Amino acid sequence: MIVFFRCDASSDIGIGHFSRCLILADAFSDRGIQCHFICSVSSRDSIGKFGDRYPVSFTDGYDAADTVRILLETSKTRYRLIVIDHYGLDSSWLSEVKPNCNATLLIDDNSGRSLETDWLLDTNPGLTEELASKYYSSGARFFCGSRYALISEQFVRMRRQNTGCIQGTPRILINLGGGDPDDLLLELIPALSLRSDFEVEVLLPETLNNYSLKKRLCDENGVPYISFSRSLADIYNRFDIVIGAAGVSSLERLAQGIPTVTVCLVDNQDEIFKSLSEKGLVWAAKKDSRSIISGIDKLINDTELRNRLIKSGLEEVDGMGASRVVHSVLSDIEESSRGN
Image (cartoon, rainbow, N blue to C red):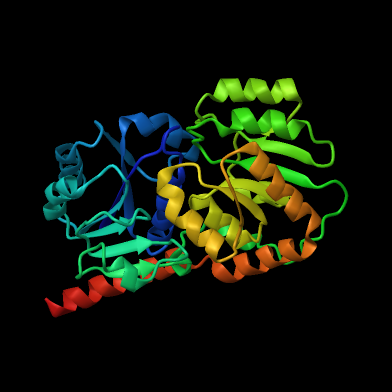
């Protein structure tokens, strides 16, 4: 058996799709199963920093025929499962690729697309199987909600068990992921640098849109930045509060117990942003510096609120999602093979 992953990463879409596929690949690999990634050529620079844990084949954009070629050349006789984590691949692409696979697993938090798949994984905290069944094929098995969140072991190992007590000057981290397509940092960095009652650092990966400009802005305003780290959990542990996007990383922060001011950066984060806010798992802010700073002040001055966010986050995401998904998928495959 071989598991393929079709995903991309770039300054426009960030690195969340690729990073959560890596987590699922690790869970399959722990079971002795070979994994292989298929990505667009445009993803090469963004995924390079993740190393070479798994082989990667590059395609010319969204070419379904090219993906099929890779599938057939890489695994001529073995059982093929393809995991798809990509908003740009539609039903037409899937209909061309699916006949060349034994099964498909779709990772999707963009409810509203009507796609045929064997398994659907949607970790939106507010999603239920009943809601998912309105959008996806009736024959699919659903893995819905944060119980199935794909979380790296690093966040689970460093789960914050202490209270939200702040000792000394509050420390704030800005982490908008690998994208920031609307350049919110250009507004946020100067605004936060004016405050002397807390310390600010910025996670500034080179995949960011207008990276050089944002780096220069940090230097000019005396705001320290972190270019890249393989252990984001270690970085989080140094801070009291995080300003973060409502994407994949929001679930990582819940799993670690990090109080967060959360912003919806792009349209495809809208559903998870609403769920996080409605369930009281984050402090939800508008996409402007005034709203974000207001959220920071609220979290700094309200110890009870910080403690509540830590507790609710740890309860919501236990970090076992990847193991649950892999166990269920392999059990389904085994049961199906016995039936045949």
